[in-house]
Image (cartoon, rainbow, N blue to C red; front, side, top):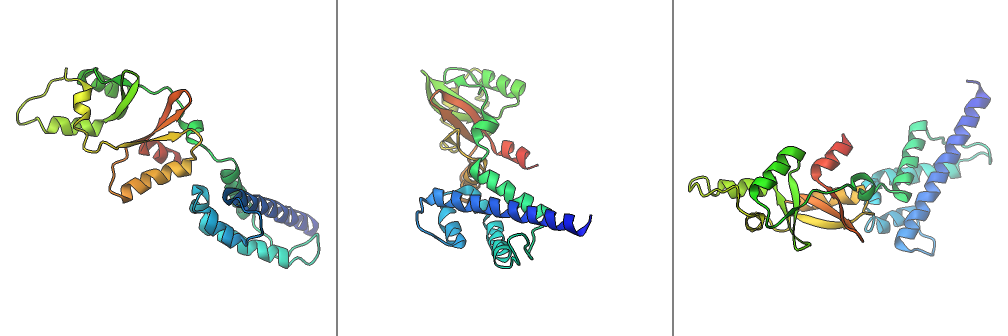
Amino acid sequence: MDKQTQVEKANRNSDRFLTAFHRIEQAMKDIIGAKDHLSFFRLIELSKRKNATIRRFENDLREFSTLRNAIVHQRTSTEYAIAEPHDEIVESIEAIEQELTKPITVGEMFARKVSTLQASDTLKEALLVIRDKQYTQIPIYKDNKFVGLLTAIGIMFWVANRVETGDISWEIDLETILQHEKKKENHLFVPRNLSIFEAEEMFKDAIAKGRRLEALLITDENGLVGIVTPLDLMKIET
């Protein structure tokens, strides 16, 4: 690669970096509704209170701000900058800009037909769904109204409490078993435009508070349109 080609590539990296940086800056202004000028660091402080993507990439954004200042203030001309970002840095800030301006949502990732059961259905029917579809969380309805999230853990506790007495019937209705879920609030309803990062934070916050959050139930005007479990998010990260 000759010197001219290296300079042209470096300039492209600078331009790409600054373009992504300014888009992130504007996105943070939009998040907090800022009209006046604020420093990039101040924008991070204010917008991270409202946006999970900013919270996730806060440290990276602070480092990018330092690099941006070096690029802008150390230019020797409009065509050449002394501080030039490497390819991976440019790709990183562009990826964050995409995550911020066009976030991946739970609706995009996890919208699907959800298997549900009725409160009057039996434990046997629930176990067959768990066996055949490998589900461990099943929304339960009664007269078209959601009444609870049945979980494999909840069923296990119900059975465990009856081992010694032998008072176990596969024909017991699910409404009765739901009453024995250790944590009634084992779910949250979320809109389909919730970002993946916000969903991840909800599960982490629940753990920090000692709460067993089994699933996020995705809803829109059509009702229940999807479900997100901790395992789903783990699969994305891996």
